[in-house]
Image (cartoon, rainbow, N blue to C red; front, side):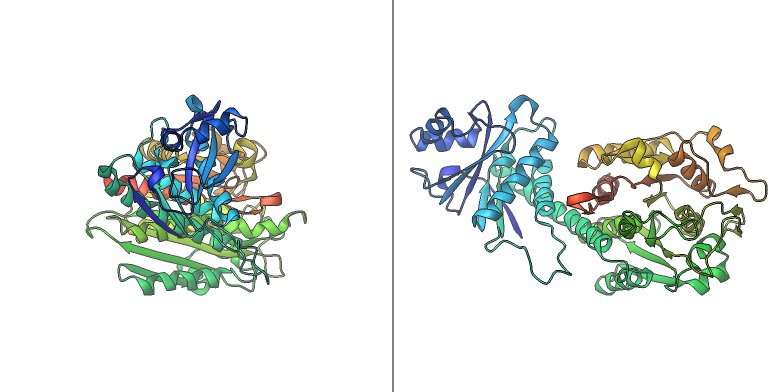
Length: 497
């Protein structure tokens, strides 16, 4: 897909299609008024006749509009002008792309990027139009014998900006939008792959490929034998039940001065989570291939950051393992010693994500990080609390939490902060070890984060629980690519700052 920006009049565009917004009730956008003027009221006559009201997402495709150079004019309903928000903007972009794809318009000039979105500038509108377009066109068809792709898909999209001085801004926005989309697509691809392919070894190979292509990237893979020798007793307790050995995957991007402390992202990479001996119910167990959504998210963010060549130092650590029941699996009641020296009583083998993460969080101390952010599909309790809209956020550092919340609001990949109070820590008490890996029925998301917080005392840390946001179920089943936009926006803000 090719994207460009230009500044011009809608009636002068030689294109397969020009895309114009219409608000309720039958109010043409500025570009629409220009076309209506040169066409001697052609559009307004249609609207008065009742062909379109301007309701959000409704479309009207016109051919050979008088005195215009475009083959088609596509009118997109934008709803009430005073209510036109971020989400409405992304909705109309997505609807425009779907319609173009279905009607054979292989290239188009889009004037939706000129619409007024409250509090958003040209850069935001162009970048998010690119992201919405790429998200709409995404399809995972690697294992289908026949493709459902359109016969004449849209291949080129030009976003119009109001003035020529906005062209450079728009071009930069396209670069960012494409990079973030590439990272999100990589995350979705990894998560959507079946678990018989996307096992820990596969993730390690994907990391090596990244390092080959970029001399600013370093890759290191630690296998299960090395992890045991190192003392990662919690991590290897999870991996020991599977024939696919666990891997700790380390990717480094050196984009800034070596004295600059790195941002560290840690991803939970359980490539399939059966629950182990504490076996999960069979219903929807296939979706447990998405338990590596955290790993996919940090991997995709790494792709986006390196694609933009941001001036930051970034380290990504992926704790990749498969949680399977076997004669060698860890058992409820086992006690393990973590890399930090703390001991854990395993009360439930399905609370395995925190076990691989706690050792990874201790491991990253060696990088002397500026901040550490871990990402994990960690708790069903987070889905109960926040549904599929917001990612759960917990942190031991208020400025870091606020920066992540603000980044989420800006990019539309929002998070919501939950408390991390000491009063919750007692729920992890064990009679036989320093702690248990289960916090009881109440506040499951918080107690899981409390567990992780015991391994993050030496740096500023935030935890993102993406159990509700990493994938969709049902008819639209598939990975979402979140939180790649959130993490990339946070790193972009740091790079620009």
